[in-house]
Image 1 (cartoon, rainbow, N blue to C red):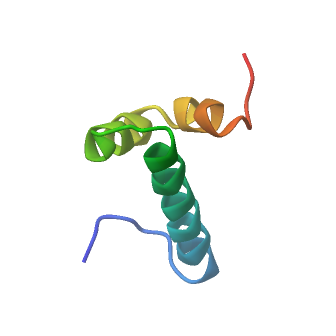
Image 2 (image 1 turned 180 degrees about the vertical axis):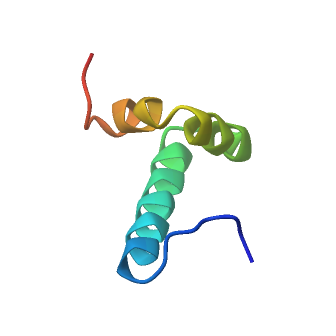
Image 3 (image 1 turned 135 degrees about the horizontal axis):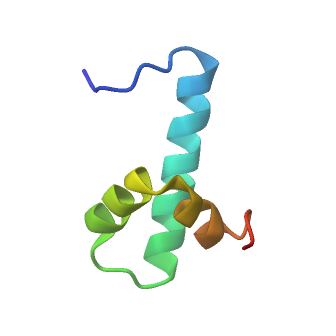
Length: 56
């Protein structure tokens, strides 16, 4: 069991976003996907910027 407290549809949405993010990391040639996901977990805005969903 993981530490995520999101349940139901919210958990499914988060899982889909994570899978999409991993796919994009792969397409961008990122070798250290685990490290990138960990960095994104500490700074979610950086993940949104990577996805092109947040600009600043």
